[in-house]
Length: 368
Image 1 (cartoon, one colour):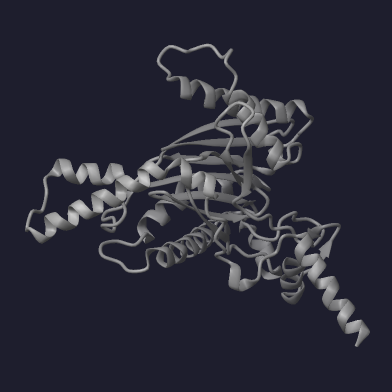
Image 2 (tube, rainbow, N blue to C red):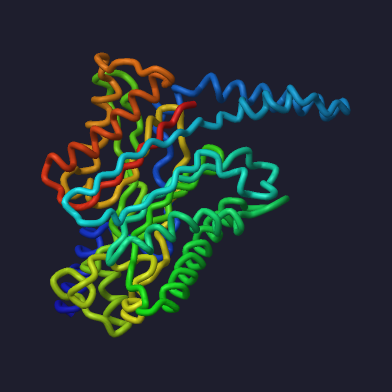
């Protein structure tokens, strides 16, 4: 009995240490915006309520409204404006194996959006290993698969369908690459992590494989103001309890913290030679409702997070955004200058701190 209890405690400690969620919590939502964050947008919430009552009266009187009124309804919905900035550094590697995709308006790739959806956005970073072909393939194709599988027309339970769509998209992209890789002579052995930020109006879905990460900065709008850092992804390390159990059950082993003593991640796109050993392409999914207090999201490969903690990276970016000495640049808005500078300085600082790996940083600005 004592041995059984100790084993259970050990498993629980391992799970907590690795941040592992139960299978039932695969789609675990992140905390809702704090009370303070809601207060920031209280006027906007009131506007929505008034607009809804007005529309109801118009419907009852048979007035369908003008195109201008429909446009105002979309503005009142409070959809944030998103813009991505990227900085990539090769570091001391011979080859740049990272890839990325920035699509602030993915809507154009979808033939028929559900009526309750106004806009889609997509940002992703891919960290290749064994070569750059898997990461490039994912950067070029994953969003196309996502566009094809996204729900169309009248739908119910959109949230559930979006999550299903993301799972199917990763599965399809992995299968397509493995089929292409196996047809080469010799067969490609490339693999890649993936951290994708998919935004449906004001709701963020992050799907990730491997050790690239996504973090959200909530707050910090004023110099010296408080802010919080929210993890939007989970690292897939073969030493984590559930990851290691799956690998061992499939007949693989974990040695020196790696699958078969070689592969550093337990989930990835590609890596066909490790799929029989329990390495999978099923992403973790997290959902987060954006609020007016949210400032930006950092998507980056592990090259950044080898030398920065998530909170340090967020604090570094905030420091640049609040720097009043930045000079204006012709043809660019003050926000573009600040975010672009912050993105490049963050990547440069990672290299300066001694990261020899490829470093790719995507900074997504959020503005309501």
